[in-house]
Image (cartoon, rainbow, N blue to C red; front, side):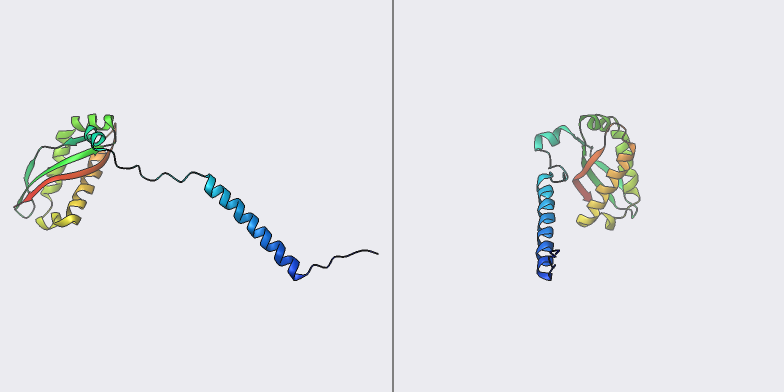
Length: 146
C-alpha cells in the first residue's frame, strides 16, 4: 500500500512562514552588505573653500524700479580648474550680474527667498559659460538697496 501524507493547512502555514523568513533574511543580508548610496558630499572646510572661491568686486547698478543696488558675491567652483576658468571669466560674470539685476525690482530681492532666487539664477547662468569646471554655489556677501 501506498503511504500518502496528507497536507494539512497547518503544514502549509509552517512552510509559508519559513519561506517568508528565508526571503526576508536573504534581503536583509544584501541590504546590510551593500554600501549606502553616496549622498551629496559634506561641505568643504574653510581652507578648501577659500582655494576654490572667487570674489566679485562690489557692483553698483540700477534696478528696474529706479532704485539702485550695491552687491558683492563669492562664487564657489567645483575645483582648481573651475576656479581658474572663473577668474578668467570674471568680466563675463560681472556682466551677467548687472544684466540680471537690471531687470529686477527691489521687491524681487527682498528676504531670504529673493536672495536665494538671485543666487540660483546666477549659478545657472554662469554654469552655461563654464567649460573647464562648474559652479557649485553662489554666496551673497554684501547687499544694499536704496
